[in-house]
Image (cartoon, rainbow over all chains, first blue to last red; front, side, top):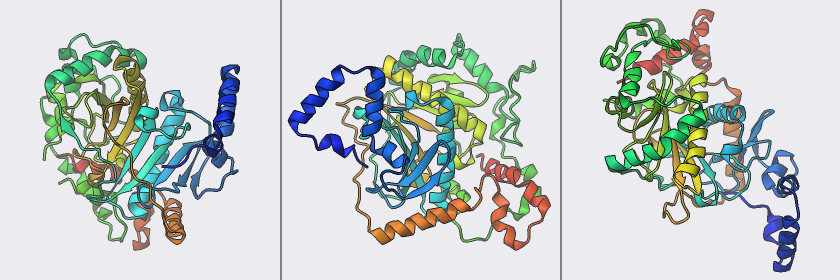
Length: 249
Length: 172
């Protein structure tokens, strides 16, 4: 993982103390400014610190990590300084993910790896080192054990506990009315399971057309509409996303 | 093969929110307890296949979840993780964003060992990525990649559809 602003690390205890004193007397804005000045990633964004930049637009840059977890490890960095994800405006965050999608593809296709870990850390407890929010894109290969992210099973009662603890807060943040019972959710979820053909825009936003649910229809594979894209089996050498997706089968 | 995420919707007990596009749920298989997963209702195996509007909704939701776990679960930090592909530890072929609450003492170690990479290797990687980024994204224009083999404009126009149709066929 890349670096903290060196300037702070290099301070002597005495200098550090002076800085702490100074910080106490500063307004939040001044502190924010100082953070930006100290932030190595802000300096990278401004080009004051050299980097291997693979991508840039108005909102963000992507650079190669100088101490990568694996070859091709990218840091996607918003140009504006945000410390953690909750501070990042939705549009910016969405743009970052959209860009991640493209960059991840470049890793899969360009470096021919088998997967990518897209990773963010918010807060020191989460292993965050730099005070500049960023997205790590880490190329992965089978069994590389780069991140010990093994999954374990938890009890149903624990799931329930977690849900109860967070549900109200999440729904209020999303501005969603709480579904009164689980049955409500179930019904809503059951409804429009099978509008198959165009996964994108076709969401009939409010599918309240009186019909009740059609059970389980979503299980049918949509064989019927394959006809018009026979040329899809591309014979090029690139690692195709489909290969990666198909590994699951 | 049945997809567990599509399946979760049948069981329901641990669903925090679900609408036409996204689901927020507490899964039974987690990195650490307290983990909350945001995923699209529809079945997209990996991130590259998720349409932009759906991805946007997932992202906003994940941010809200991340805020909520600080307050409601007393988390001191969060990790946001997308396991994209089998090699990245993805166990269910259904894209999802995991919000993992963290505490100082949780003993979870999601960090990695940074490596030193030789200059020339770095340069090669850089060039490979730069090269790929010049190409059109597969999601936007699946067929442009095969154009050399003589595709017509007509097929190019359908490219977005074709791509998505293809991913659709993988619905188990």
